[in-house]
Structures are given as C-alpha cells and as structure tokens.
Image 1 (cartoon, helix red, strand yellow):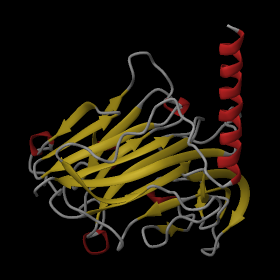
Image 2 (cartoon, rainbow, N blue to C red):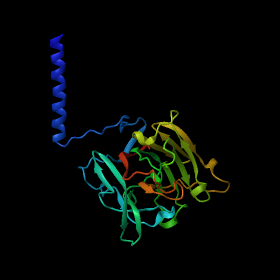
Image 3 (cartoon, rainbow, N blue to C red):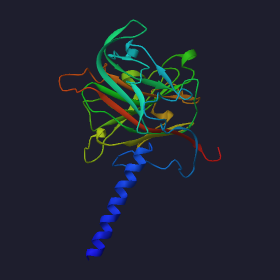
Image 4 (cartoon, rainbow, N blue to C red):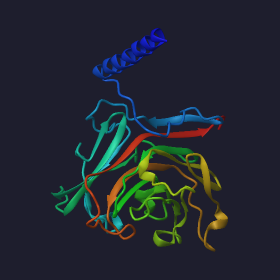
Length: 291
C-alpha cells in the first residue's frame, strides 16, 4: 500500500513539474468547463478560421480583421468609443479579448465618451455566401453590456443597411443574463422589426459563466441558428413580411464587438462593474463538403 502511495505521489509531482515547464516555455491551456468543438465537422469543410493563437499582447491578425474606430453611436445610441488600442482588443491565453473600459476618451473623430471598447470586422478580407459560421465565446455580464457575433452583407457600401442584409448569430443584453438572441434584418424587417428568436438553457444558467459555441448554417433559402449544437430557430423566406425581399444570396463578412449601452440594452447603472470582457476562443467558417 505504501509503495502505491509513493507512486501516486511521484506521479503528482511529475505532473506539476511538467505543467511548470510548459508554462515557462510559453504554452498555455485555455481553462473552460465546456470543451471546444473539433474543427472537423462531418459534412463540412473548414475554409477560414482564426484560432487567436498569436503571442499574448498581440493585436488581432491584421490580415483577417479590421479594427473599427469611432464613437458615433452606430445608429443604436451606443455610449462607447471603439478604439484600435491593445487595452481594448488583444490576444491573451489563446483568446481574443475585447475589453470595455469606463474611462474618458476622445477619438480621432473628436467624439468624447465615458467608455471604450472594440469592434472587429473582416470586410474586404473575408466574406462568404452560405455555409456554417461559428464562434466559441464567453460573454460578459452586466447591465448595459451588449456583446455580438454577427454578419453583414459585403455590398454594404453600395446598397447600405438594411438592404445589404444582416444576420445576428448571437446577441446578448446584460439585463437578460440567461438569454441570447439570433435575428435577421433586411428591407422591411430591420431594427425593432428584425425577425428573431431567443434561446435559454432549461436550467437558467448565465451565458457569462462559460464559453459557448454560437453558429448559423446558411443555405440559399434557409438560415438555422444554434447554441452548442442546439438548433433553436430556422428562418426562411416564408417568415418575411408580405412583399419583403430575402436578401441572403450574396457574400457576408464577419463582425465581433462589445457595445456599451444603447437603445436595446439600456445604459450601465450602479450595478455594472468595469472592466467587462468578451473572450473569443475561435471563429470558424465552413462550406458544405463537395460544394
């Protein structure tokens, strides 16, 4: 018995030493209760991804992402100034970390706000029509916070919003910690008239407590919404108002952002703690195999 105890003790020491050695070499493990899904999905071929595995402190990969700047409210009366500073968007421990800070800030647009955050998009760097778009994200928790993973039509500059189309794969507002939303917006069904559905876990757990995988599977006449592979909504042209156009027939680009305040979530209050962080483990885009 003593011999077996000594063996277990030696094994434990070995594991601790190995972990310390890996850490000293810069190898880090992403801690999470929910394991990440494999990048291989039967029936799908991975065509684009960002695993956010640059060294700690790096800015997001500029070959894949644009960092949007400005504090004009983005049509939603948002309260933040988006910046391209590392304190608002950087790589840490194999994740993209978008941080919302409470601070007085005046950007290059000369608009002043009391909050800063970050907004990334893949416009002119990657866009795709149809396929599976997914991201593994840990959202923040607090009144007035508005994290989002979404898509916009790549013809935004010529046709404008909402004619270009918008697919909100995941949105959360802080006053609903146990609910996320998936929504489509187009001409005649945009803003508050967007066609969406909520998703909540049966046990009422907070989405901020762990990473979750948010995805859409988009085909010519159908968009399916998923959380952790739970299908919770399907949109087709039949869902549109009479006479409205289905505008999901061309490439869309990807966006990730953490807004502060706005018409939908409302503003932060005395209960909101800063900084707030949105962690993104990966973003992956697939096409149907053989397509």
